Image (cartoon, rainbow, N blue to C red; front, side, top):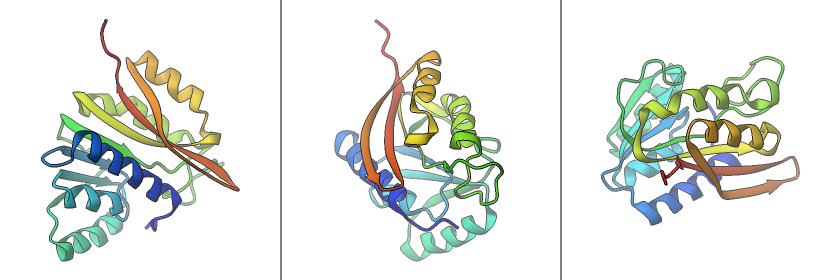
Amino acid sequence: MYSPREDTFLMNKALHFYDSEFGLVGKKVLEVGCGNCYNSFFCAEKGAKVFALDVDPAALEVSKKEAKKKRLDIIFIQSDMFSSLQEKDFDLIFFNPPYLPSDDIKDITVDGLEKGRHFIDIFLKGFKKFLKQDGVVLLLHADYNDLEATEKKLSKAGFSSEIIGKDSFFFERLYILQITRKSKQ
């Protein structure tokens, strides 16, 4: 299971921003690839109805136990991306994908294949049908994941994106994209 690191904390800052702008109380929230559920727990503590999705059943079991200890009501779903998800109409969907470039997946928590885009591209193809019309997506992105390609794919699908958070380290620059549907004019 992936322990909270710089990317987790950057997403948490973005969730704080979302909470200050829109409020999390009563919102229907989906975390894709929840792992340790650090950010799902934050959303649940703020009053959101949280769905935590992960492919790893062991990670889900650990997170379920921790949620029970914390007395948080979270719905856990074992799913490979969106394949087993039945719920729709989420106010907020967020994803901190495995984004490190690799030749093959050795560690599902970090390896994102070529340019680190494998899971980002799957996410970009699938999130639209689960998001409310006025919903928001928060997506973590690294500088080597080809941000321009992501923005083009989003635009083609009728979405716009804005960088609402970033952090730099000696080995990478991380961004949080806030994604919304383009307004019709």
